[in-house]
Length: 497
Image 1 (cartoon, rainbow, N blue to C red):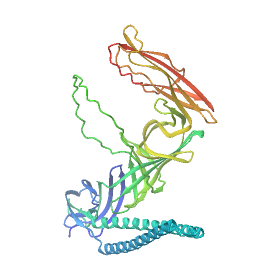
Image 2 (image 1 turned 60 degrees about the horizontal axis):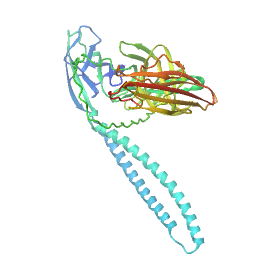
Image 3 (image 1 turned 30 degrees about the vertical axis):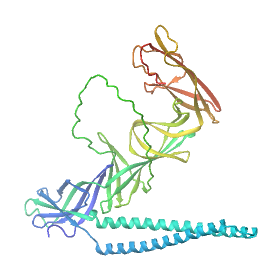
Image 4 (image 1 turned 90 degrees about the horizontal axis):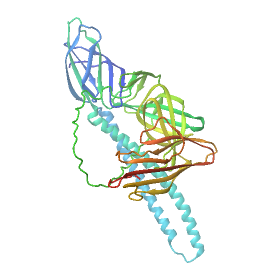
């Protein structure tokens, strides 16, 4: 048989991205007739294999071949099958007990609904039925709990059985032909090889807790690592990359610029897509020593040495910091009466947080889960609505279409106001946003008859007004608007409101 029978194998380093992993392994192998061999996990991408002989620079790998070998542990497999059969019998017994209890519950319910001649008999039966049903319901809950536990155990063992008998338990044997002088090709050779593999990746998980009165945001960033190589990475030098180093090898084609007449499409009714739900993931948390290194298009984090088990997710804490934030409320009364709590943090240097699931807390109370992703010198986070701060729109006058022609023109008039209320016992600062009319034809004229005199915010999209508003405790404020638009009489206008 070519290659090694027993070899010393050490996983030296692992570079994980959100989709794959690159492993580097050092192994002592036995050379026979100038050929060495070693095993790779089935998830390895053989085209990425890189091999180096450490003993001598005069020995090179001249050819590589591979074969798949079936790996079965018959004794462990038989024990697993027997364990599954035993659990299935125990589950069936619990199911039988469950059916008996259900029938007893229905019998006592029926007993309590019967008609009796004596009022005393009715009270006695009802009281006895209440006691028996209370006891049976407790027993039913206990049975349901035990049945759920048995089913979870069976799911785990069946998954293990599938792994032992499926393709994942096949091993990939790699044979390498060595090239060099005979004296350099010794019986035992130390090689170092690296390869990319699937089914080993990491994902970011965040916890953000805002304390508005303290103007403080607690930020926790964890890495959930899951590798299914089939063997433990013991004391591996672990590195995480925030994204895949290479996205595209070639640039996309430049599409042609075509100017042509507009073909008006048929009217269609638009619908709203449903919101996607997310589930929380629990895992084991450890605290590594973190060292960040910025690359051209991504960042990598050196976490030092860690042991990563196979088949079980583990969490490592990358960062825990308290940030000073600017807390304010965002109100857009035209689309919502609610005030959204906003926290903005500014960084001294560019900060990158790759996309991951975030758990949001407000003063220790869980709010919601949402996707977190930001990079740059600042970040903005939202923590839901505050029912104590609200707004409402009141339309005072609205003229659209052909009402009030002036010199052959049609006139549109909108007159409204917003009422913003702070029911808190302390003042609040708001970002107040309203739509700014966007004209799509130079023949349309716009007049701003009345606008609120407020402090404009520097960062604001061109299609809206953004103001800073301070509202004292228990105070209501009114902000009035009056806008008029004129257009040629024969122009078909879509006023937008």
